Length: 156
Image (tube, rainbow, N blue to C red):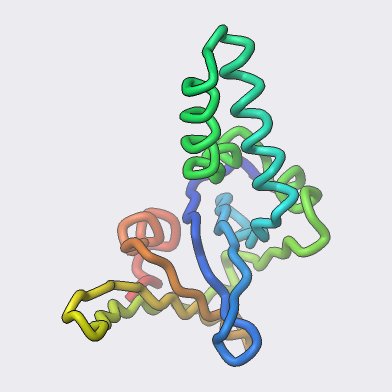
C-alpha cells in the first residue's frame, strides 16, 4: 500500500447544527486513500507553540516569534506533507478515511454572495460522492486544480 501524501486541501468546512457552525477539516490524499483530518483547537495550539519555539530557537525576538505563530496557524496543513496516511489517521479519533477507488465523483460549485454593502464573498462547495456516502464541504479558495491532480476526470 502506497500511503505517501500526494495532495492536501486545507480549510474544508463541514456544516453542523443547521449550518450555524462547522467543523474544519484538511483533506490529505495518498494514491490509495483520502483522509479527512479534523482541525482541532489542540492541534492549532500545538502548531502555534511549535512555530513559536522554533522562532525562539533561531534567536528571534518577540515580533519574530509572533510572526512565526501567525504563519504557523495559516500554514498548519503543510505539516501533513511529511506524514504518511497512518500517522495522519492516528492524529485524532475524529479523523476518517475513504478509499480513492470508491470515490465516484467530486462536484465543485462556485458560490458568490453579497452583503448589505454590495461586498461580495466567494466560497466553493465540494460534494464528494463515495459509494452511498455524500460528503459536503465548503472552502474559501478554489480547490479544483488540486483535486483534479489527485482524482483526475472524476472532478467536475
